Image 1 (tube, helix red, strand yellow):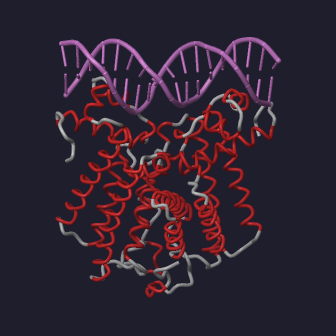
Image 2 (cartoon, each protein chain N blue to C red):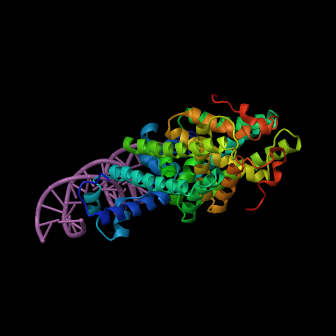
Image 3 (cartoon, rainbow over the protein chains, first blue to last red):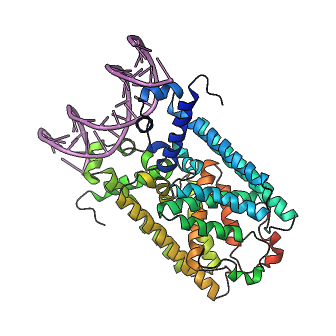
Length: 208
Length: 208
DNA sequence: GTCTATAGGTGGATAGAC
DNA sequence: GTCTATCCACCTATAGAC
């Protein structure tokens, strides 16, 4: 979006490769040399497109967020029931995991302490966007009596984002994507109105 | 425990400093030079106590787990009600956050993709210990009718560990420890039997 | 836009004196 | 146990030719 000059294809390919590297190894876990090797160019060429690693990092988050927003729009476009929207939201995370990837911003959140300020702000913005979207779905679900929860929608949204990011992280370190699916199913089941809460036991069975 | 020779005080101080560095910057975010500077010794001295960074990392996790287990034992020793145990469990995380620290193993879980195998196994072991402890508390709570949840205790435990780790990570990147407290309160409130589920709204109020 | 070459720094790690 | 000195690999980044 705000890259000045540049062969767009190359810049895009750099971003794709770097995104995958951050999602699997973290921002401090890869170097320009890694990108250069996969793209079959020299490190110097990369600096033409992204002057510094900090700048590359910022662009990485912006691109990731806009692609994420596109997926949220797609969910809204299909105009599903609120519970289905939540399931499809969780599925975005699940699909990343199937490629052994963490959420880009979840990964960066862990590295928060070492990141330059512009990246920190971009990460917060990503989570804000996620929480606002979730809060809107939750609010609608409550209004239409399809979802059930206590307190402010935004607060439930904040809990959900954290819980899904955490579930993702643990699933990755157990190398077991189903671990994420089980946690996500359980978190969402709490919000489903259909259940008789006092007799909840059969709502989330052992398997998945 | 299995350090061969060594001035124990120095080794312990190295571990303390390194623990704090990992909790704030991650395993890939600090170097022997950082420890050396804070301890006022040279990098070479550190290698006397911990031959390699991978070895240091493994010891870090072992020490962290044994201190964590000691805290869990302390909770069991006080023989509280199950819900109080869960609250005190969450409080361990909250206290770390107040010192701007992530859980050591939560941090390392994010860096999983870059860590040597012995560290990966130690991290999984830490989470297993946590989940087993939580599952036992949950099981007792259900038996004594003080807690309410659907499905297998171990599965709820796995969800809780992930959710708390994730909440911690997000709270840190928002630089707002209360964000963790709100998420934790909400997660635990779901388990409390006392509430009338259909009229749950007043159980988790806006503030904290 | 991509290259070669290189600067200037830091990474983990070792040898050997004290 | 701690030091000095050093190794070599790697890091981000720049200069300047093509």
